[in-house]
Length: 212
Image (cartoon, rainbow, N blue to C red; front, top):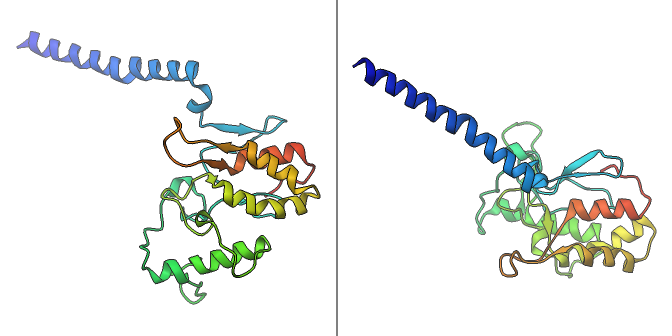
């Protein structure tokens, strides 16, 4: 009986050592050696070494000199700890019409519907009421944190960004073209543009205040 207990204790300690120490340290060592950027959160740094964010998580850029990300349903907006979709179906009145904030209650917060998002996008980018709006400009991603927009979305925003940065639209479109990420493995997903990376390039090439 005593031998069985000792053997059980040894086995438990060995398993704890392997799974609780050896395995995690091995995975950490391999990931830091082979994929250091990915293992550390895909963080992006400015020229002076300051961390400006992660290439995996969208940020709420709103000033005209920056490209704007797609809308978010994550918390108050792009909150990584509250990653979520709106969970609203295509027939939802809230999804289409939105919900205005009622100062008398705390149950409903402002929720911009497709109509408001489309109107805002057209106004920001100097479009007419009849101009088509990219679907990613008026819909929220499944995570609420998608850092990418479509090339079509970026091309529409380019004119506004160029005007705010006092440069030629062609220069901005050139940056947009170079920032396009192709399909993964050539077949998965659709081409997209990482908004944070693109805005970082713009701040490095064009002198404009970098606050957002």
